[in-house]
Image (tube, rainbow, N blue to C red; front, top):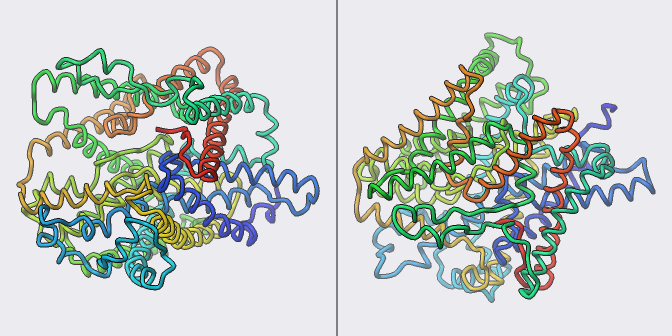
Length: 637
């Protein structure tokens, strides 16, 4: 391939810019209004894959008519990366959550909850909207964001929140710049999530789309989704059972301690069987094994009648902190070399192919942290508390990014967040009310991490490295996508909520984020707590178990458990997927043992087809639902 063929071209950036508002609005309609598809909840986003699929089909037609002007793989990947980047902003666990939180206390305050007296005065007015008439339109609908009195009141807080999130994403870009070469070129981590976009775009889509085995997987997943979608709209049509989460023994285990098994669900999501097939065997085994072990712990806890055991959220917090230190440890030599390059002691490490020079990345990271410090201090948060909060947040971000790069697994680590850790280990009594209020106001971007921006950024750089795209021009495309994505997200959410009413007709509006944030703040301020040594001990236990498993993994080749599997299985990620991981693990084990790597490579397109077929039919159902104005079948949850 020639150098000109692998450039990030202006037309690919322009197409990405044009598609971002379309993608963001479509995703906002289906997730916020109809609460269907949940395309941003998965490690590989649904909508960008579907858009890439349509682009490839259109490009193949264009290629037959005007072959010299058809899009090449680099251009297709640039568009896909830009569209995916917009979902890291507009998705389920980022700015959708923000709209559910930042004005919540001024609409839901009552005489009973005493929010007005407790913490209204701690919330900066430049970060929220308090006008009741505007909030009435926002929550009840039948209004418009295009009315001057509504638009003007929202511009200021959204401007500051937009700058805030842009700075955080830029800090992540800087961190990824500093570690990219080590994880991508030297360690050659697997990056399983990128297999489908790379496979789809290869040779402008011709290679994969001509693979018959891929179409078998595609047809199987597509047919399952088609039948179940029809059954969803017409209950007289029988559906295919156990595809989505299904209880198998809740009615059997009703007495203590066996009722601890209630809540275990079996699912056979085709897309997740496809994704899990590309995971290392030890990880997929560890995920489902530790998920089942987690319920053994629950049975023991129910039998003993203990108050805290097994304290899964606390174990998970300790495990993810340990994963951060493990990720830093395995990257330490590279970081030392990068540090020498930055201060000029060693110039042997080449950074000309990096998204930005290491020195500029370091300056950008420091500047970003300074801006965050100024922002939080202006909001009323003490700097030392902000340092702890963002330190923990970026520790989790780093660990999640490492797990995604190495293993590609989903990371739904609900309730593993900085403020819970701070309240547990430090006690809320030791933090001032103003800082606790701002911590609660920040809950929207760390309640969950499903569409976290940082792993998607480094996966984009890996795709660039795989096809020879220049990182610096891709970095520019990503920054453009972030800025356009922020603006598009603000527009889409306000348009949808003012039209339909955030709590009137928007079934997926994240008002629970506001409830969780400020109900907890209310408890913190009414009943200040001391450090909880028991829960802190479980955090320490989670960390020690993770370090111990990593030690055994390094020292003994026969060790079957992966520490990331333990962290994922006790932090909610496996609630949906444990059985699909078991199925994928068993299938892959049999293929590798009896057919070898050659059979594995031959059958890999089948599993890519499972992902693609499920994503395509799920996207079609969401478009049908949007067109008809009804909720339709979704392939997940």
